[in-house]
Length: 312
Image (cartoon, one colour):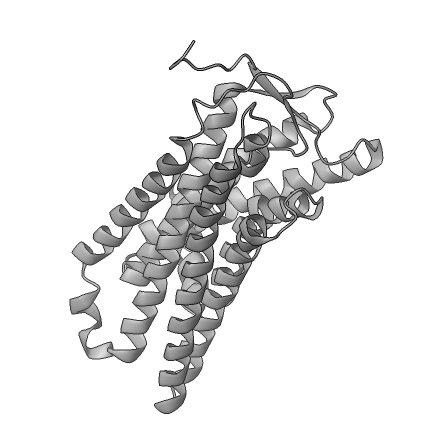
């Protein structure tokens, strides 16, 4: 049997979040509404940026792509979680679990790089305004986008390359509502300490390192704004506060998952809901309600739609 996949487990069973029918109903309503709002909000941002010529700039190009990634990210685990809430047997196939892990890590890695690109965009806009359009050219924006997806896929493939051939021959119960790598490794019928350490180092260092890099860059930008304070500093600070809020909301749960010493605590399940549903919902809220240009563009888009309906 050497060289073969020893897995005899064909599916994994989720314990879910709770057995209480009342809490399940509350979770169903909460999850469904937030998932719907996340999808609608991010779709509105994507279409607004695409259709409004006033928003055809590097910052909004990156923002629209962040919205696309958020829609992908929350669609990886949320729909199945919502469908499984009232089921007694919450199961996912072996390859379905692997696929879920692959895309969640790929989307997460992509979003990390894209957030770094957005921080660089703000740095150039505030610290080198005269060279902004030269540095943040369409070619550079496309480079950032392609690089973010490549890094995301490489990050995910690197981790799963060591997991797909692990022997899963006994327990198949995951105390969660989705497939995550640390819990899956603990079900393997072999010693996975080295792999668990590798996952923690890979995901933990990437998330913490990216977060520290972003914090340092935003501190530098804030110092530059303070040093050259002028009439436009309020707008710059408002934009930066939106970016910083999104960064904290995205990286907070991720750093807990991969650096906290007790990954089996129930808190990480609820933080996973926050990361899968609430963060993608808050991103369009933060960027829309704190951005005058975006609100004006949405009003223009609504006016055009009303006008077209009247004509037709």
